[in-house]
Length: 177
Image (tube, rainbow, N blue to C red; front, side):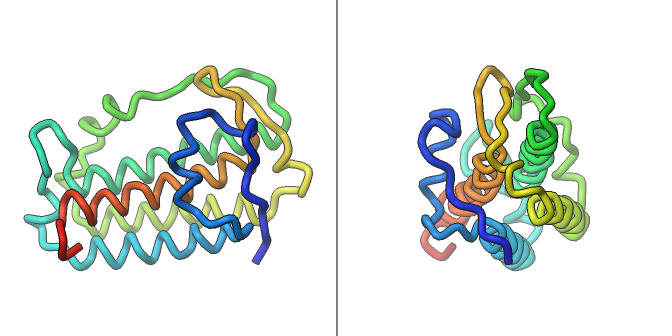
């Protein structure tokens, strides 16, 4: 499997550090993406419908909504990576996940349909990063006013997923998670 070095400071915005810090400095981001999918599937398939719809506090997302948020975020960051890798200098807009989640319809969907979409998006993401020319990972662009390299976007996707899976275990499932 292709190795992609972890980004260095200056390749990603400050907010992304908390996601990148969740991953080891092992250049195995594609393996982490594959493992993350398996962890998400195992976690979600082990929950009851009641657990999947649970919100750990008023105004918080359900587990289904969190899973679909991870998918939405991955789609957007992979799109950014494609644009930047292809040398597109157009500054890209940000997105408001707080506005996206309520409109996702996640809670009305089966967990199977959410995981099917998750797998499809992950397959596309892995194909993109597995086949980019090496120099594409050094290219950078701006989204939501923040500069990032393509390499940093790949690592963001993996770290963001790891962040949310940890939150599901800690806040939604408690000590047994």
